Length: 168
Image (cartoon, rainbow, N blue to C red; front, side, top):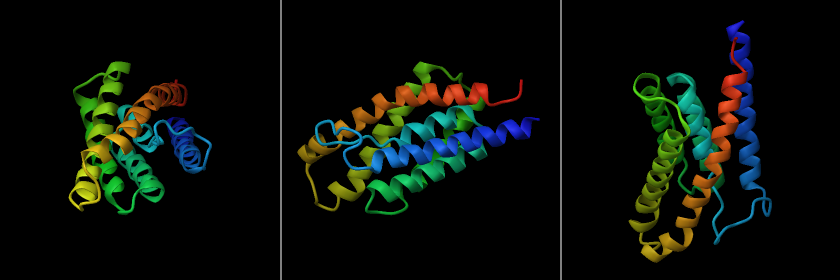
């Protein structure tokens, strides 16, 4: 009985990632705030990792990162590697040491979003000489804030899926 509910939960997560990918890549569907669109795969993968075991969390991080690389990155593999590792570690932390709560989820999602987007800017924009600090402020701050705001909705969606699609 447990395996059947697990299958449906994982299918729901997969459909969520696919729908979020379509939502964030369709032109003029999501409004741009100060020229930035949200990176919806980051909060989706992190909130899934908060609730699932390490291996499924790692694979959903891999899928979310690959979709994010296809949508926004010129450097294929960066988001894939980062989200795979981060989702595995977050799942490990929340399985053993922390309790899943709204504040913990928002804290981890905010930290991961700032770190992943900030490191992307540092490695692939700043060190390549393509932009200065004002380029970061103009193009990436709005994207980070918009992503964190969208994380609130994604947390409650994934919490609902996790609680309702498991054995009773």
